[in-house]
Amino acid sequence: MLTIYHVPRTRSERPVWVCYELGLDVEVKRIDFSKSYRDSPEWRGISPAGKVPALEDGDLTLFESGTMVEYILDQYGDGRLRPRSGTTERALYNQWCWFAEATLSRPLGLFRILRAGEGTLDDLIEDGEEKFHSALGAVEKALEGRNYLLGDDFLACDIMMAYTTILVERLLDDRYPNLRSYSARLKDREAYIRLADQRD
Ligand SMILES: N[C@@H](CCC(=O)N[C@@H](CS)C(=O)NCC(=O)O)C(=O)O
Image (cartoon, rainbow, N blue to C red):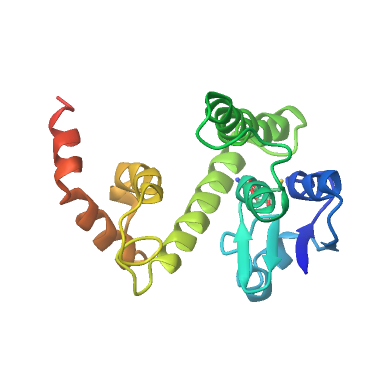
């Protein structure tokens, strides 16, 4: 049974909407959106950065709403709601999916909080730093006992991740031994050295 952990008006609406469009049998579990629940070991065990949404399907647990959408379409979409893989349309589809989350949604929370007068700039900086370390902690945990994010094989998801983790390398203190060795391993790659040589 497909289960989506949901809070109305959050990004969990994306995968739930997709399930409804496809007419799937889905359990939509409402969860408590309080910070204390999102920080609890129970929720962090499902969503390691403490974010909403999360999805479970059998043994698989996912966080990241866009990934859930793609997973649901892969497993149950039967070709609906997405152009065929390998087509130009699919590249554009991917572009807009990533843009919607990574570029359009990202700054929204920040200026909404400031405009609504619900926090000062200092509060936002503090909150941003806390969230960043919380997310870094999730990566640190994912790397436990692994050379790369998914295990022994270097994959493009490591390039996506390491662009950021190498960029903030000076923040990787003693809390992040796995990330430190991950960065060192990645920076040893021939392709990375070639890239880094072009920086000056
Ligand atoms: N990129 C993530 C973002 C998840 C996210 O930021 N979710 C919000 C709700 S829409 C949340 O949990 N906010 C609480 C927080 O950031 O502390 C996704 O698409 O799932």
